Amino acid sequence: MELIVFLVAAIMVIGGAVGVVAMRNPVHAALSLVLTLFGVAVHFVSMEAHFLAAVQVIVYAGAIVVLFLFVLMLLGVDKAENLRVEPLPVQRPLAAIMGIALVGLVVAAVVDTRETTPAGLGSGIDVATAGVVDGEGGHDANIRQLADSLFSDYVFAFELTSVLLIVAVAGTVLMTRKLREPADDESGE
Amino acid sequence: MTAVSLAVPTSTYYLVLAAVLFGIGAVGVLVRRNPLVLFMCVELMLNAVNLTFVAFADRLGDINGQTAVFFVLVVAAAEVVVGLGIVVSIIRRRPGATADDLNELKG
Image 1 (cartoon, rainbow over the protein chains, first blue to last red):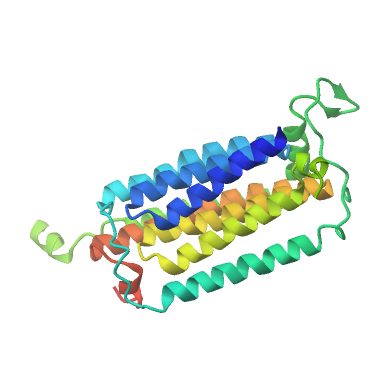
Image 2 (image 1 turned 90 degrees about the vertical axis):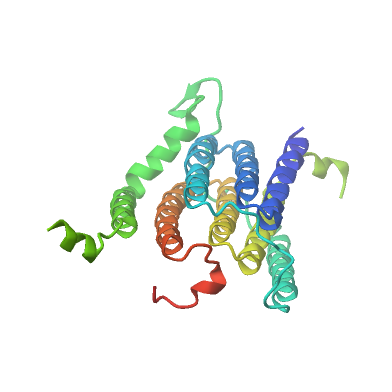
């Protein structure tokens, strides 16, 4: 059963990713990206990361892809790109070789260390159970454990992310602001 | 492999899937020219890394892997906001610009 879930979600992820790269129309690429993000959320659920799965759907599929689509519509760049024309003929074969080599290296490393990496080094991840036992388990076990980690060990980094978001928003507003033309100032006076 | 070992996907399955996803994203960044599609391919690579983090959190029994994914999500959101702001201001000035046209910072 779990294998079936894995395979279906993996097909979603890979199919969506190929769609992002291969679709000619950027709007279709953004919709393929949603498919990939939902597949990754399914994988998160099957690895007991329930909170991250919810955040993945809300933040990525909800906010980021909508932002992409909004910019696409706003700028009117949703015209289909002609993928046949290739200014640099060697680029695609080189990119394919590099991609296959990258995947091959990483897969080789993963398969090589599959037995040597010990399982269960850490303090363990609480899984959702029917009831709370000694402060562990319960249906919200993942959220409580993540919150314990986030607000104790990483509380300073957590505060810094708020600074990062404020800086990003303020910088973007400043950058995309329409500068008033000097000619308009003079005509207004 | 026996049928028993195939019944439950281990974290190795997820790591291989994340590697493939990262490879597709990397090829997309190298091949595509639309700046918005380039951003989407970067998102694919970030998702592959998130999947790796959660897979290792699962394998090693350590919740801090999931905490790292939380921070990656926040930084990815900030990155998209700033990146799309840059794209908006570039395309407003030069409509139809692709990554090839942006080989100099001078507007």
